[in-house]
Image: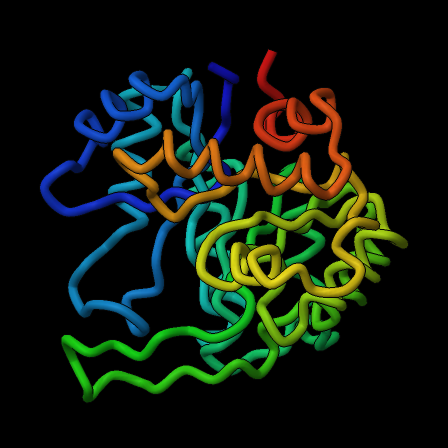
Length: 263
């Protein structure tokens, strides 16, 4: 069974330190995971996933790595305060939902990128459609505006030492932005997390065979007990596209290992 690093996991209520999830990972040879906070304004009021991330990475520092979810619409200073607070506590990156109404290319956010680069943190952004919150219809309806790879072109060009990871392969409608940006900038990456991240491959969309092998990452959005089925599907799909066994090693494990600086 091939070793895997899941670059896209979220904490769950009822499993604060992710003990239950870790047991599932062990069954499927998932040796590490990057755990991301969630934006409470987009999902659930009063649910502080950022604090859950801290609990998970502190309980299992050799297995879980974490990001703090920040919202640029709350202002640069508040965002910087969050990055400093959680960065000092041990997270290695920031998680973004530009759907909430901000454009990462905007020059007003340059101080944020400077702080992220200074701290040698990564950037992980949701891309594409963001499902509305059915549990609380009063919460903000998110838009796809800003949530695509080209909206990170400016900071990615300016800050070559920051690794930018685009979740869901950059979003279904904008997957070509992923292919273009990753072909030009070595500090840009994409995961294959469902739904759009898998959808573009299921539909064999144009250009996917040209994806730079060292910039493709395995992410699942919590595959859980479906890891085995998921692994088999991706192995078959990527090999049908001309990926070698060595390329699969990069995809499932080596690329993320390098980004997470796992020895």
